[in-house]
Image (cartoon, rainbow, N blue to C red):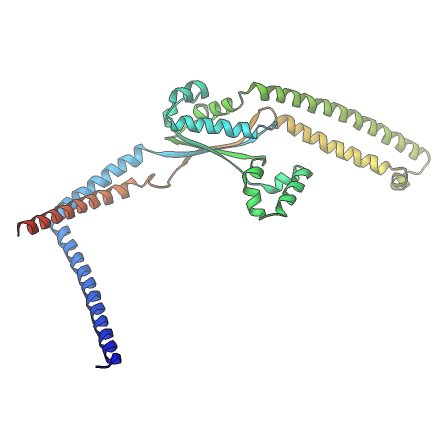
Length: 326
């Protein structure tokens, strides 16, 4: 017999064996499906009972155990970003340690056992970040030259300097501002050091506003005097000409800049009344992630799956015992 003929015979044998194995595989699947049908037919009552019990317990759990997400948008002032993140990390560690005494006595949370987790993350707003300061713009520009801008705006070094940050926490059942939000904010704003910084910063803003008002008043007096002189000389129609040539246009621009600055300072006085300023509070967002609110669907399937597993183990045990006896 030639080598070529022997190779052909081997290939035919291999194909035949593969074909038999494929046929056996599908036959086993068909048998398993049929056995499954017989199993459900024999135990239809038990399956129905377990399904009903699962639905009933699931409905009860969905109605009694409700998880809610809550969000606070804050802006840390006076360079208190790292302080803010450290405080939130402390609260989170106490929740994980189930230290309800600390949460109730130190933080002031009314129902500490219902507080399940808390976290903080920056709200990515690179446009606000660079608009607030030319230095920030140059900083981002410099970093972007050496890497991916998307990665840079989200990395810790940059993101912590964004003006707004999101504190999110989860509670069992609904909560109220007096129970959780106010105690958390009071805890975050309880810093002797930053209170001193806050006092001095507000004093500086008020002094700056007084100085700006004085300069604006002087500019107004200068403009009024010029207008009177121009009217007396019957040259009021050439005001723009005089502005351009006597640099009064620069004075007007300076006044405009000072008025804008005064407006910003008034907003600062509103925003800087707290070390960690709360800008938005949203409570009791129903959490439907994972198994929350889905127990009426999960428990029936789980009970039936356990029942099938137990039935399979019993069948496997009997089969193995029969083999030992034979």
